[in-house]
Image 1 (cartoon, rainbow, N blue to C red):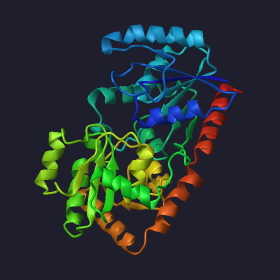
Image 2: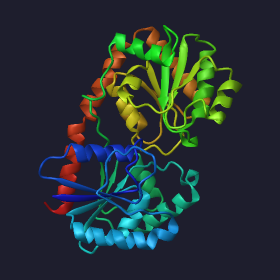
Image 3: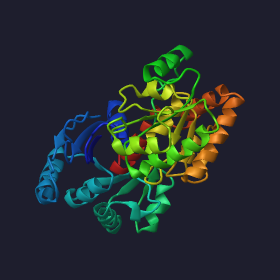
Length: 371
């Protein structure tokens, strides 16, 4: 069976891009995956090298991109086309030749469409109007299904397939390796290390996380916060200013983009996902848990579903609620942490293993393709 995937780009760091990489790399011999991107971002590592790139450079290039997309789809003759996220799904619906099976793959939750960019809101509403056209829709988060239905999505056939995690790649560190990471990052000896990894964007709620951490750190001198991700470094003047205004210069380390995510996540005592909106099925939560690092998450998308009873969920994304959950986590750690470390990893291995998830994808694609 031949599957053609259409995605905005395959830049490193995106949840959809990472799940696509796993499908391409862990496919059985009976499945061929081909990848087409709308554009290739400059100076950015790629998770997958696309077979085709449309070279889209803004709205004026859309007609030519659609024509080229349609021509490539006819040349490839896929059994099924999978479009990832809203923009690609809209264009794939316009360009897909008659008779080609089309599956939309939605990677986003929609707690409140008003927080999206105006152009993105237009694309989402256009997708809602066209949502009877694809043969099926995949959602990565259970929470996303009713959220999309509420704004007019009419799925002919909907399936929820979560992200899967490579528990052989993401593994716990031993005590010596964790100490080495702390020394490398300049974390004080004996600190209880709280961490977060994500790009600098309002939805990631760095400001709320910092305010919550400041409240608890005033009570707990052993806490240290490690922030990583694109733009999360000392050159980020807005972030540095926020840290300084809270008096946290000695309690927060900005580590930038990390190449070794298993090492980074495994070095933490607690991972905190403080997002305000937009998360579907955040990979980093499952990756941290696979590394034996318990997670505290806000209830956005399927974050609480991933954590289950092997971590902590804040009642809301306010600094006060995150601080309350952080106090709860630290008090739990005082009583013993190893059982929760084991529970976090076991939950991922039992519920979200990569082989099981890729098998779900393959079976669903074959069903839609009529195989």
